[in-house]
Length: 448
Ligand SMILES: Nc1ncnc2c1ncn2[C@@H]1O[C@H](COP(=O)(O)OP(=O)(O)OP(=O)(O)O)[C@@H](O)[C@H]1O
Ligand SMILES: [Mg+2]
Image (tube, rainbow, N blue to C red; front, side):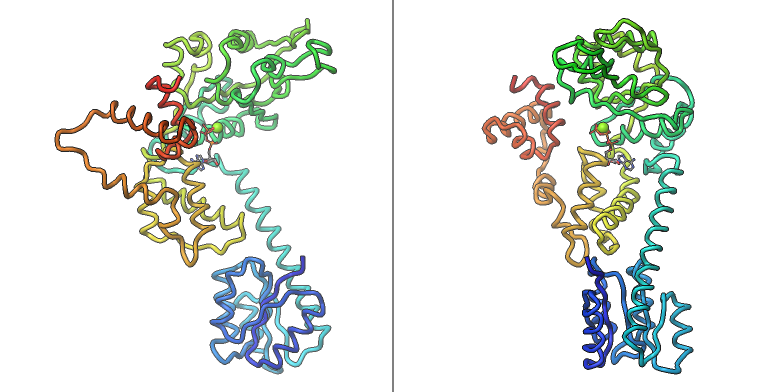
């Protein structure tokens, strides 16, 4: 892809000439005749370089340079000055220009300056990226949040990480359970080893045993070669058993035995393999209750829950929302090459008021969407389900109060009926994440 340049020059004839030279060299050229016109084009995500004349009919090159450094610091900038006005060139370099060109210049000098400035920019990007990577790796955890509940969590993570203890991470969907598991790994003495994440809900029941423990050649139909399971893959590191609440009851005793004995045997194998790994499990179910009600083996529950870490739902730490929004906005801007924009106060307030049943994940998605749809600045109209929120806030609690459980049940039933039994559609009608919807159906014993 050819680099996109913005050429700023108030003399139309000169601009045409230089633009022609640049296009001839294979660049895509945007043109502007004044500082304001150029600034309006700075939001162009494809832009890599600005070449501006010092003297413009409206504004000047130095003013434009300042805007560029403020709005798009990663862009390269070449200032064109009149012959002999070296002080302008010096001022420009001081203000952060990558290079200057004295008029009149030859085609060759122009192309050289452009090429050099573009390469400087690529280098700068690379350095910035490396620094950001390093930053991410060195940060204690990627968890954002300063609420007291989060600080308590950080302290517990730091304390637990270096131990061998099996940890059960609990919390609603989207609260950051996987991030916690990764933090436990990264801060452990096995940080140099593998982190193997297994979604227990995603493996077909018939395959689970072989997937977990591995299989010897010919152990079952289709087992062409011997294969290491997740436990072996995680040797020397951390095995993260996500959605442990979904693990079929039939397999639970085998997992328990592996955890208790620290040894496994491959399916169809004889020899035992000693385990050297740490297990972290996560669930968004209330595992204690599942165990009490016979849907999860109690002995396995107690073995896993020696230590539990519980993540607070986002609605219970609303004070962290501005911080998270800022972080997500920066990430979305980076990801999609959008100019960094501020989130207006009214939008931020609205974000802080929402219930966020999908927690941090849902907030992240909402912020990304706000930025992608923003015209001038992020707007409340682009929040998903915004009109529904107003309808809900107009709902008045009757003076005599109401029967919450009955209301909830009736709403669930109505939604199912209106969606003609289509559960994901019914969940959408209620503004609930699918899982949360299913959970409630189960709670009320609706729909089989
Ligand atoms: N405290 C946090 N700070 C920053 N980002 C977070 C935080 N918590 C969650 N996230 C982000 O939200 C998303 C969901 O997090 P994660 O996958 O860890 O949630 P989860 O609890 O495992 O959810 P699920 O139960 O649905 O699997 C990820 O993109 C994660 O980076
Ligand atoms: Mg998860």
